[in-house]
Length: 302
Image (cartoon, rainbow, N blue to C red; front, side, top):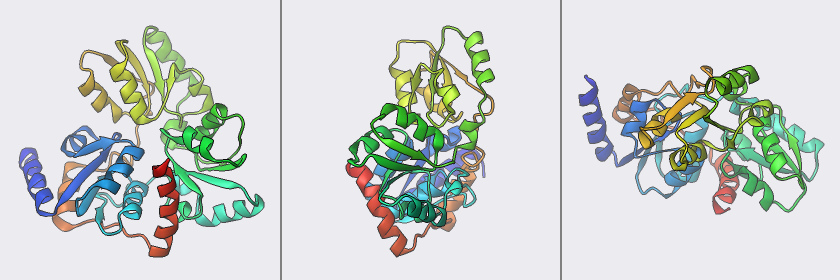
């Protein structure tokens, strides 16, 4: 089937199944183009919770589809690529978190949305990179265990110095691999460009930035800024939306290493087969789902 025919067939099956397609901003451009909504984890979580559609096709990675299922158990949630995972999410398990909590009695646990349902079920409240500071500030207790991203946690800790944030030793392998030398070279090559960086990057990278924010915040900043040139310090998928929003502006990727292999697994064919065959149907055990939902609901309320 050629590309245009496949896109038409995806549209037909979407109506037939009463489905919506959501895509993370790190997905490939042609997948973003067929989605009903493109956004970061926070925007997609809210959209899926509110959508009246019976089926959600989640073009992202496993923990994202799982979060949609936690919030909407009555809906069918399909993940087009079942092996699209998140190495950072795998760096914390329910068992290791339970052990750490036992060592820190009374500590409040905040988990990044990049975690499994089992881990969310062990936490007090969830957060994303766009709302992490607000979530931490809303907690009355001083001692907070932040899992699993030590880079995001370190950045948040600097914004909320009144809290004692205990960091987990996890990280995003894509953002974490960026070297300071690469950034300095890009600064030298484009001295008049504004550097926009995701807080999943290491501290030595973040301190060089002109602006630090989530995927959506980076996209919005570039769109609304009067500046014409930007160095982008997050996964390369955002370039698609950035160039659509501002075709007259120049965008330079901070490092060629800013690519997430898992996010790039989903293709038009993946989406087509997901709708055609109902794959892959994401499930969450009800006891885990109910506990994890409390964690996500607290974030959405905030």
